[in-house]
Amino acid sequence: MRILIITLITLNILYFVGVYLFSLVFDQRPPINEPNIPTITLLSSGNANDLGKVVDTQCFTVGPFSVEKTARLVADRLSDAGFAVNIRRQQTDQIQQYLVFLPQLKSREAAEKVVADIKTHNIKDYSIIASGPYKNAIALGVFSNLDKARRHAEYVRYLGYDARYTEQRQRAVVYWIGYDEPFGEPVPILKWAKEVDPKVSVQKIPEACEF
Image (cartoon, rainbow, N blue to C red; front, side):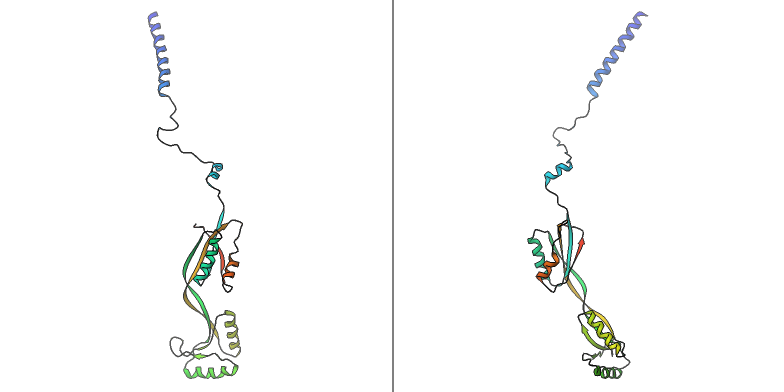
């Protein structure tokens, strides 16, 4: 019995010594980095400033310009001032003029009688449409301004005729200028456009930045 107890105590001592040595050899934390493999460094918000100053910007598009030269002169002025710029072409239907007219009558003779009457009311611009879907209608003038077309149609209606006006459109190419500007520091782009061409009529519209 005494020998058995001594044997058990010896085995327990050997077991604990073995466990301790095993833990020293195998129970280790993994290395932070592997040999020959670069580590990844996370940049804090403070470190980001070391990469360069970040300035908040907003982007706009200005147009439409009907003349390419005007658009390029305005874009050059923006570029010279240090702004990122691009010019985009766009196909569009533009209103070229407004036609005032009387709807088509039953015959050429009926149209000529109407013309003879309206001539006595100091209406000098008139013509009978000779063919097409508006045959025997009477054109009463073409206007570049909607208000003028409307006033002329109202005057002819005052004389007792069903005068109307309609848009006449034409396919055209226009130009839009995209650019960025510092937030809170607006560029006087509309003023610059007027300085390039006093007759130009454009608008400034916010857009998503693509620079």
